Image 1 (cartoon, rainbow, N blue to C red):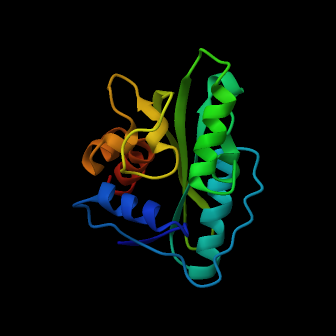
Image 2 (image 1 turned 180 degrees about the horizontal axis):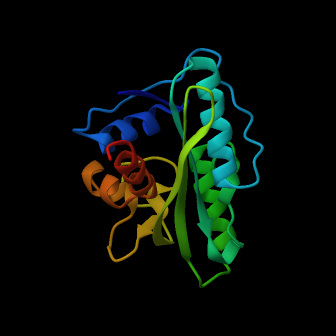
Length: 187
């Protein structure tokens, strides 16, 4: 079964394909012309906007995620704006660490909302996955992307960037959400 995964991020597409592993589901890139306007007020709304746009341009079943980092001491920021928090991945990490300097509370979570739509853009299934942790005081690890080098995964001494792809995919917010989608599709 082929499903369009609504992203322009090659890291996310690779991660999704790895998590899907041995299933008979193949995730493919969106068709030319995929350019959603992410103006939703929640992760769920943005994932639906992207899935619906991917279905519109591809005329295929489509899956989209919207995810972000929510930090307690920053009232949930960067949240929906995680990818737009600053101009580059390193600038986003630097800004986050700077804004957390006066705070003792480093609790955070990665959140991923996924929406699966049919070829007409109608919602078939929607779910979320979360990964709890804390924000480290300094970066560690070279794997992953985004905020992974500063996200200490709950109950481990590692940041996401220090984990192998297999470890990360097992516990990540995206992995948790995608496994629910796969379970729904393979019932």
